[in-house]
Length: 374
Image (tube, rainbow, N blue to C red):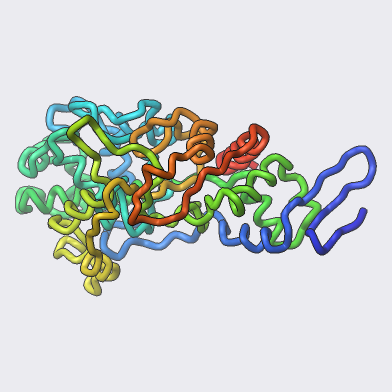
């Protein structure tokens, strides 16, 4: 056998043949997608982050309809643990059909923004809002306090937060959300076939790396190169966690639009539950500078948060409105994108790719390895 250094090519002699197709530059572009899993950092704004009692209570509350005012459904109704913490429906069904797809709840720890429009800057705030939103769990602060007080969880709750009867209902709401957040921080996707490939490249173990399927390698080359996917889907989570116009229509009807990031910022900037609020447990207010400095602009209309691609093969349908039914549909959307409908004052990132059928299959093969176990 021999190694061709100029192209990082590994060839097995004999009947079997496997190759590392990536150039040295492409290998260097691949390394920042790991290592996985990342090291866990407790959330300083949540005093029960990484607390085993809070994690257990949060898991129980997540799966219990006690968090809806009439006991009609639980968090798990829209974020099913058996379906990668999402559902197969295009748009979430709360008390009414909601405007957006239910995003997976995995790999959320440590993000800067939460939700399709980024209306929360902490995981505990993102956990809080569905409890009190009228179209979802529909509790008032007062009804939630009563529900927790009368539930089987009262002993665990008071062991962490003290006598509930002495607490203002808003404090009960925040503390409930923080236990949910402690649980959600633990939800992470496992290592994948891609991670073994990436780590082998870092070790310069080309023999091991050559086990990665060649269609997936070709798909990765497209992902890094002509597809420009890496511009938004980067880092170990395969997401920059920022907001972009992906060319998906954002009209809800002839007279209504989903404002996306613009609406998310309107909500965030009027919210009582941010990292800059007194509800944060961090005396240093780390991260508060972001909400203090963020500004709205017209180009925020119709932009949505870039989702992580880890576990992506398990989370169909796709996009903020669930309008694309499978990975091939997503790839064809970008291949045939109508650039005329993109924001004229936005980013000039996307262009029609005109992928061949083989290239569509290769990109899909790569994306599947972000879900497939080693």
